[in-house]
Image (cartoon, rainbow, N blue to C red; front, side):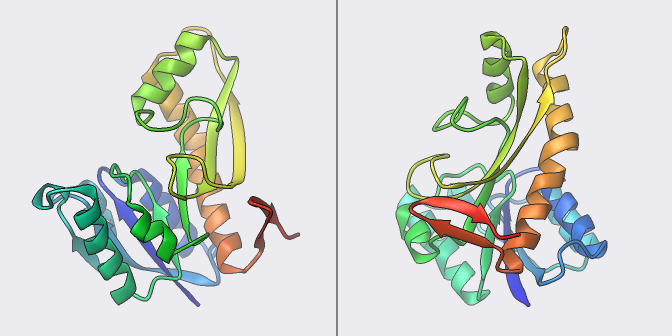
Length: 208
């Protein structure tokens, strides 16, 4: 049984999708053992408490720079004996001290089809604003491994939704969350815990 640590910063809708998948038996070979928040008062912490999942708050604002904050996160992940780290709406880019300590063991969900609308500065509604400005006809989300470069790790899973006439960034964001993010993130976590994701030459493959 793999230990899953989920890192959060906000409302925790993706965390809830993981909790529901765990309760529904979709995630069989792992369990969420800890939720770590970058700020106090995040509603994701309430979701964790309702599910009897231990929580830890490591406030970003209490650390002078990314390196010192990342070292604190790394210390907690090691203490939790994390087998998989899931970034679920975690709004801080981690220093390479974390990614190098957990190679191909950290995953993130990004609300666009990487390599489009990704990288530093592309988060939250900004992603959907740019997609609509560009006039794309489909959009979606990507689950990928995290490395030293923002949104540049090996892609594990993607899925799409149609962009409709009259979509606003908020409407598109909601459609992608409900139809893609909340499905492919738990599915990826389940596959990882079952050792069904293999990385070869920097690319991720799902073993059927």
